[in-house]
Length: 306
Image (cartoon, rainbow, N blue to C red; front, side, top):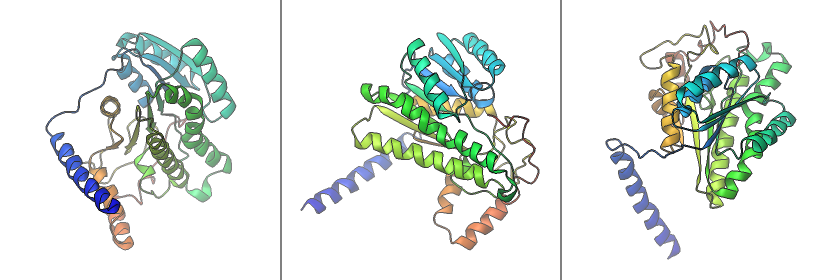
């Protein structure tokens, strides 16, 4: 009897959730008010981190900026104040160093208060074939792109759990969903970041902490300089993304509690195909989309820091 009742419940709720999703194609999701929330953004000294800071600032938040680039953070802070942030604080922090993350996190708690929106945005890319990448760069990639998320969660999640309120944002990558030739270490770090964020999100739901939301962002190449030189084979299908557009979409996803954000929209279809196509057909599709040659003209920028 329990099997029968639970099956009926799942079927009915599944129908309703699909109807609800269809309705939201025409009726926009209600946006939550985050004025006064403390937003911490890692990698805030440039690129998407800076643009997100400006977008959050316009919503009346208190901003906490982390980066290894002091001058970059100063400029982001100036722009954020112009955009309307109620307060802006910035701290030098190497997110690859666990002890430094914990130390600076304690300083933030003392000087600013509990962080309620955490945006793990800092990232690096080596841009080298796996066998050509020095061990030190591979380790650094995992430390920044993956392990830093562990340490920031450990530092700021307890307060969110205590209040059953917060939002965890992981700026991952489409390379965290689909393997790419020439990005072995980067893909591994981003796959791990996606799995980590998704798993912790489920853990929070399972323990009744449904007031803490999770947003996982998986964009294609963004025109920030991090992947300078990379070209896309079919720009209408997979365009190099405009940073301002990406930042606005991320903020919208946060305000509407969207769990997964893939950019461009064609990635939803491509990611779904990966899981249903035979392997040979998947490889054929990858070759057609240019996934085997995306990194052939990679240059990156000097610091490769986003």
